[in-house]
Length: 363
Image (cartoon, rainbow, N blue to C red; front, side):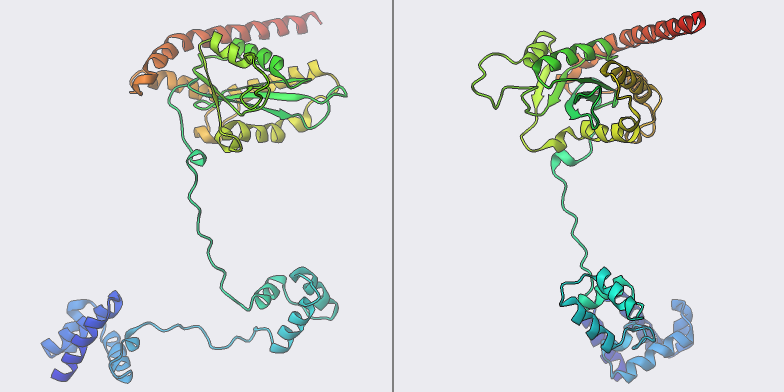
């Protein structure tokens, strides 16, 4: 048994495989105790387990492969495609046909074979390599801002269908913290429409604004239009209201991802059923849709809260939260103004509901 002990020690030095080492240690213990039964009881294995792997090791003449698990996969399969059919598939593929076309051609010949099998044959049955996940750029990583109004994203989208025979431009702004949103459409795309929209936002938003983020379009900035020497209307509006106007780098619209994603929500829930007879009717319908979006529709990015519920949550929790020193003044301003603005907005909504009820009763 001494010669076996020496060979087993040599094998242990050659491997790092945990499963193989467990078996070798079991053999060494059995040799040391002089009893297979006692060694198996101490290690928690059956005698059949011991002799199965001992005999395999002896049969392999003390090679490590004798202690490794072997594949139970059968050498042949009754359903494997014949070599003759494989040649036929490759011959058809030389005509420039894809797997779907080859499947159809063979089906006409009475040979039923799936297009996925044809793909495997054309790729010489190579294993598909797993694609390495690319690291996300910094601006594509998800993030949340702690204070409502800390930064809003502003963008414009073409309305898919003409309204009143005219093409409309849909201005949309969204808060990065609460996803509170406001939208209105105009018949033109220029700085004057932007100025009007920002005034509309100021009237309807239920919290103060610190920063507005836009792309570099001419409706938002003259940065890439050096022939324009005067101040842009949006820059003037932001300066007058003490708001920062932030521009994203050209070609990186992902930074405005929240407003871009909100365009798709409009396509799913609003654009397909919007009224297209008059611009005024369209904007009235969109205003109702914004009420639904902000006060009724749960948002997946907010753990299925509505933007308004998120706003109330931030008002409650922000009092005890620490923020960066540069945001401290804005935090205090938000906690002071937001409750007043919310109450004012609720009164406006209640007055509107009462007015509608009176009109209905009069009719």
